[in-house]
Structure formats: C-alpha cells, structure tokens
Length: 147
Image: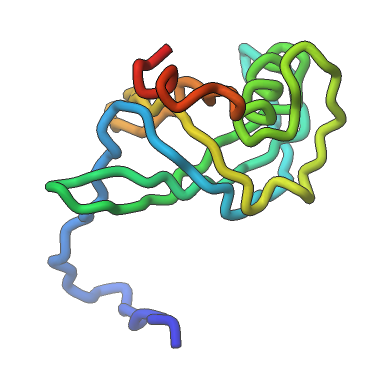
C-alpha cells in the first residue's frame, strides 16, 4: 500500500528538510512515464497554446549507485518551438529526421531514449533543464562522445 502520509494541523511544528537534489549535468537514459495535456496561457515570449507535460524517469549515478528521478518536460505546441517537438519525437524513435510526423501522444508512454541534462536558475531556485534529446538511431559510441 502506498504511503499516504499524515495530515498536519495549521499550527503543527515541522523539522524535516527538503531532500531534493538536482541530477548532475550530463548525458542520461530516460523512459517516458506519463503525460498530461494542459493549456499554456501565454507569456511575453509566446502566445497561448496547448501544452503537454511529459514525465520522464531519468537514470543517473550518485555515489556509485544507480538511481532514477522523475523530471517533467513541458512541450508547448507552438510553431516557435516546433524543432524541439521534433527533437523529442526523434529522441524516442517515433519520428525520422527530415520527415513530417503527426504527434501521437497516446503512444509515448514506455518509450525510451537519451538526453543531455543541464540546469538553470529561475527566481533564485536551481532546476534541472533538458538541453537536448539525442536521436534514437544515433550510435552508442557517438552518444558517449557527446556528439
């Protein structure tokens, strides 16, 4: 049975610290765990558009131990970032480079690939930031060399 936690009152004392740590910058394998369709309300840089929040389980090493952490990758369905959409689908092996592709969201769960993880700071907080999805058909030796 899943740990559902324990309710706290509004004046409860808390002492546990957040244990979240960033995945170090580097190249990693991932598996698509889930996705959710939502709506982006728009910003100064991009108009309102549909958004897909894809949850990726990223495998990495920490102190010689293999671990995994879920990372959410936001995909904005906007022509401005169409190249990033193509890169994601090429990374999971559903799209071939140079060929048109109709997005098939219901088929992405369970697909895997390789990515380049970086980090960024937003409003004083550091976050993992996926910099690149490597093409699925790229050879392992090319990927390890970092291209």
